[in-house]
Length: 335
Image 1: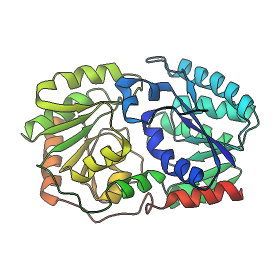
Image 2 (image 1 turned 180 degrees about the horizontal axis):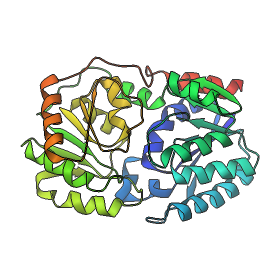
Image 3 (image 1 turned 120 degrees about the vertical axis):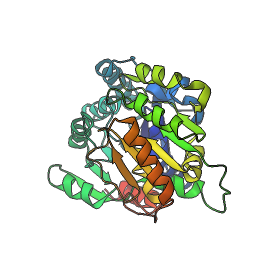
């Protein structure tokens, strides 16, 4: 097989790396289409591997312009697919640039494998995710609920594989890892107005060291960065973390705070106490490790204190058991 992977934001790499690695190990062809914010240092490009021979750059990022970004991704992905003619175009999740890539695959007649379809989070992401699923022919679902939802409205094959992000986390934290001094891990993306200010105010008020992950490239990212910079002297900020290093930071933190899906997804498998702020993940499946809270700094602080007091949760396989990649490779070969 030859599989083309669209990696158009930093989060995409942690989703596809275990699958691409296994395909290469088994002698299959892998074409990497890396672009969008995954080429930009301030959005974490430095934490991703360098492009190798035969891999492609997709220059598709218009700040606060999701429509323009999606169109650029579609045009450039289409040109690459006409040249490479892979057996599969592998796409992930629910972002606008990924919708553009999927549209190109559909028009170029390249079968599309979609990872993370059928899930619900909230906001416009759900409509984009379902649109990508409608274009796909192979659906690689993370959870039983997502699989059931996909079967209710899509054509093609649905396989519950688990999420390969959990594979990467399992490998990263294998063995004995000493826990460092207590700290909070804060990860805030653009969504609800005021989420960054309320979250950072609460985090700093704990008096604990704060390690901050830079937001993604969604519209409103610049406003989030301005809020985060007001607390610059009080926090250690990270723009470029490899998936393995981020997994280790989650594994070692006291509490993960913010509105990233990683607290619900990878955090469930790690048993990390998570405080989910605002509405960005309001419909996403969650395990017992998550406390949901609104945009009130006092309520966020109370939730952080409660999670610190609770400590680690029992591991949950809600999003996978850490062995999704072999199931996905088998599904690609059998579809």
